[in-house]
Image 1 (cartoon, rainbow, N blue to C red):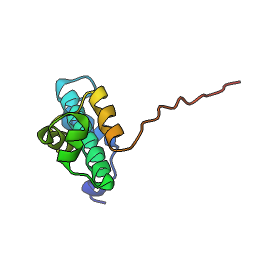
Image 2: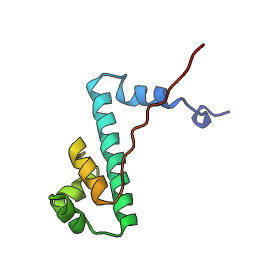
Image 3: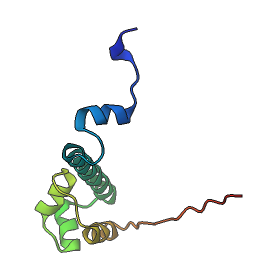
Length: 103
C-alpha cells in the first residue's frame, strides 16, 4: 500500500504542518481557522435569513465592510458583536452545561 493513501491522525498532520499547541504558527493557524468558521456560520445564517450585508450592518450598527470582512474570515467579531449579529439574524445562542455523574 502506498504511504500516501494511509489515513492520518488529524492532530499529527496539524502538529507537523503548523507546530504543536502553543507555538506561534499553531496559534495563528487556529485563529485563522476560527475566523473562517465564524465567517461561514454568519454567512450561512444571513443567507437563510434572506438579508443583505448592508441590511445586517444597519441592524447591528456596523458597516457592510465589517460584515464582509467577518464573512470572508479576515477578522472575527468580538463576543458582544457576535451576539448582536446573531440576534439581528433572529437566532440565539444557548450555552448548555452537561452534567456527568460518577459513582
